[in-house]
Length: 195
Ligand code: UDP
Image (cartoon, rainbow, N blue to C red):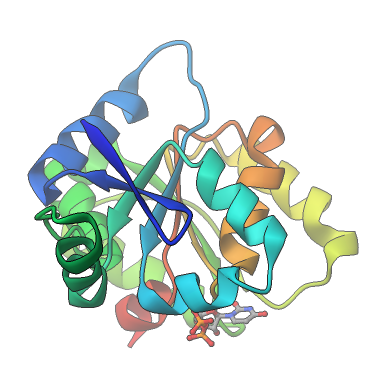
């Protein structure tokens, strides 16, 4: 897989199908090891200019996909490379479709109550196991407690939807505690699943 540099950030040239294959390998690999996924969009690039810790975390991600067409155009114009889209929403739905009841998912983020609805809808629609849920409005002093809750849930997949930056920093900073095979910063995906 080729990794480009775009605005000082990494971007992997990988299709949605290849992404799902790779995440599937990580999810069921033994012994379990943590991996972080960033779905890059133009807002991240703007925000990263003034947030150095966000840049560091994106650089440490195991996989960085193009979330939308803005990134595809930027890669074409600036790097002369065709980068396929692999949006967060499609990755999440794709994993749930492929793995169904073999997948344990933790839903972290959105306003209180939304993650519960998202989890119920996803369980009804895809047959996934719900490892746990937690809203996304807590301060840094609670990070460790939440990270330990997720670790103890035995989730394969952590969906972290707490806004650009906060979600990627949480996944990367706590990755060793979380020890979740796939952790993805997924923006408004929990809202969509809960809607
Ligand atoms: N969110 C959260 N905690 C926060 C801020 C946002 O859980 O402290 C959730 C919000 O409820 C929504 C998702 O993160 O479900 C994306 O929020 P938003 O679109 O505001 O973030 P962006 O990615 O645009 O920065």
